[in-house]
Each structure stands twice: as structure tokens, then as C-alpha cells.
Image 1: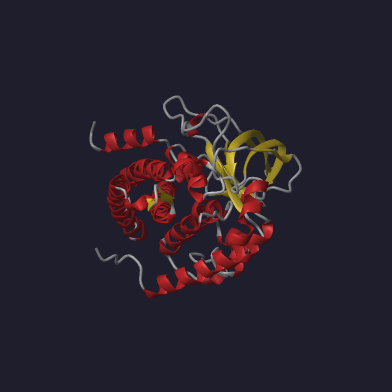
Image 2: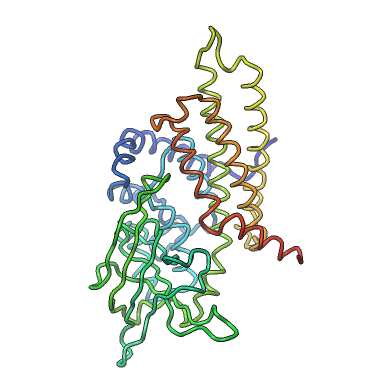
Length: 385
């Protein structure tokens, strides 16, 4: 079936990005994988390529293109090559929407030029030890000083992607206690400068997958955050978080579809080259049937991911639709990647083969951005159940 989601400009971008990955990322990726983090210089190169400013308005140094299609191509091309761009996805897909939606003109003038150039890398800090998906249960606090010049931030966050190298982090904290009939009330968002006294990065977490995407624990001890770095209004943070969950879940869905597609390509290449009993593994009926079944699932996931992309760009992607896309695409990717690894035999279990890394990277898709169980709850509620 003809795919119509991308035009000539998108395909030109794809070729530029593919060449960049082959020249600047693939030759060094094993070293980055072993270190568990990408070098800061990669972000500068990505900024020079224009990746961080695509949807940033022109007056702040961006290209002013209001579309997620270039992000979608990044998912496809990085997974195709078996690489990651570290925490850059959080920088663009998670942090930027909050800046664009909530920042005042003065804040945009301060934040966005440095965002586009990678002078300041951003992350998002919601999750706390013991809260997980229960965002309303967070305990970090930000109390306004008596003179009204700053907030005093105290608390801790965990599982913060990009947290090691981040220069600013959008931190969710309580500025007021929850109401009896509304535990979501009282959360506010702050664009916290990570160089402030009392801000510290704890452990760089040792993850199963996404090894080059630095994930950290953060701690705040009497951090004085200027009032000028409050994003949006006090106590309305939970509602703000809900607005951007649809785009976050689309990103996970699209990334999962791209991973599944990459797995099929990897497996096909492997079985065509691998010889057993004097014949290519691809010549056996089981190999053909397994790859055919995986390809059919990937085709379906691509259709769902593309439809969600078009709806997102049109401003029409609902929370339930985003949850449905995430649930479907992540579950498809789980099945497909597992079957493609099986076709590699014992070599599929070795990290020197991209399929092994892909298998580990994929597992978190059914956890972060809301677990599969949470997605089912959202969908069921939308069905009136």
C-alpha cells in the first residue's frame, strides 16, 4: 500500500539524517553503549543539523514547522541503524511542548534560543520514588519565600531520562496541599536551572535497555528557584501534564512501531546470510512464515502510528486514541522483536548484534508514559465501561 504521510521535504530530511547517523553516530556507538551515555558534543551536532529547532518559532531561532513528522522520521532512522540519540528525545518531544504552551514571552526569549542551539539541554521530572504512575501522589514541595522572589524546592525524583546531562529540568512539585475532593490540585511546574545550589544528580541508573540514554535520580535540598522560572500558573500543573500526555504516548507508539520494523529488517538480513545444513536459514518454511507474520503485524502498526501522527498534527488526537495507539504498537513490537530475536538463534542473545539491544530497549515501552494496564483503563473509560 502506498504510504502518503511523508512528502519530498520529509524524504530529503530522511536522507540527510541517515547520512549523519552513518558518519557521526554508528562508528562511535559501541563506545557510547559501553559508557552508558552519549557525549555532550552529539547534542551540539544534532542542534547544528537543525533537529532541536524544527517546531520552534522562527523568532526564537527555529524553523517554525508545526509538525511531528520530522520526529517520526528520526524514530525510523535511528531504529533502522540500531542507535539512540541519548536524551534528545525528551528534550524535544517532552520538554518543548511545555515551553511553547506555558512560557511567557520573557521566558521564551530566555529559554528557546539556548534550547535550539543545545546550549541548554532540557529534561522532565515527574516520577518520584514510590509514586510511579500516581502523579497526584508526588511529595516534592516548592514553597514561596516570604519576600516572594523565589520558591524553595525540596524533594526527589527518579527515572529521569536525560537527567545526567540536563541543564534545565521541568520539575513538578507541590505548591499547595491537595484538596479533600481533588488530590490533583496543588501541583506546579518549574524550569529549574541544574546549576543552582542544592540541586544534585544522584545515581546514573543502570538500565536493562536504552543504555545510551542517561537516566538519573535527582535530589533537591532547599533549591531557590526564581519566581521567573515558574511555568504557567500555580497549582494547575496536573492539568498541564495531561495536555501533553497524548503527544508523549504517540511518540512511544511510533518509536515502538519503528523498532518492530527494524527488527524485521534485521532478522531478514540475518536469515538470508546465515547458513545451516548447507542452506540459508531463510530457505526454511518456518523462517518464511515467521517473517511474514511479523511483517503483517508491522504493517498494521505502521497504519495505526501514521493515523495517530496525522491526528496529532491536526490537533485531533484524543487521550483515548493516543492510549490505544500506544497499547497496540507497543504490544506488536513486543511480539515481533521477540520472534525476530528467535530467528537469530544464540547470536540474538549477544549484545554485539543490534537485535539483542533492540529487545532490551523495547521492553520499557509498555511501562513508561503510562503502563499498558493504565492504557487499558483509559480506553475502557472512554468506552463508557
